[in-house]
Each structure stands twice: as structure tokens, then as C-alpha cells.
Image 1 (cartoon, one colour):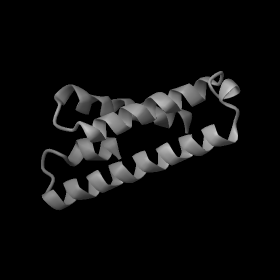
Image 2: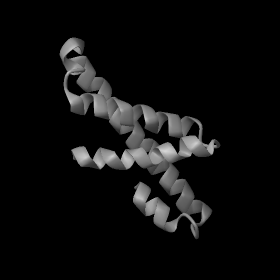
Image 3: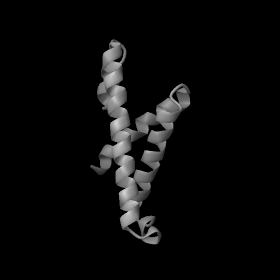
Length: 89
């Protein structure tokens, strides 16, 4: 989603920007729910020993921060870190 948004964001209509924003919120919410379910099912002591779980936690935190503080340029660059989420997929 982020790659597609970066390609069309310069010439995008408001409707396209709204669609990308909705997709951004949807996927961030989906990954946050997945993270919470994963944490609820596994013991917290062993959960943090898996590097992928910690990786997911960091990506979800940065995603939520980038959605919460969109007006700050440095924080909006955190959105690029979500691309690394595809490494796991």
C-alpha cells in the first residue's frame, strides 16, 4: 500500500488520498489486532524471545505513531519502516 501511495501521491486526487488513508488505517488495525491475539495466546515470557514477535511489535508501534502524528515530517517517515513488515510475509 505504501509503495502504491508513494507512486501516485504527487498527482493523486483527494479521493485517492482518502482511499490510501483508509487502507492505511485498516492494515494498521489488522496488524495490531493480530499482535494482540498473538500476545494473548502465548506466554509473555516466551513471546519476547521470538525475534519476529519483537519485530512485529516495533512495526506496529511505529505504524500507530505515524497515524497519530501525521503532521510531523520525521514521524511520517516512520511509515517507510512498515515496508519491512513484508520481509516477514
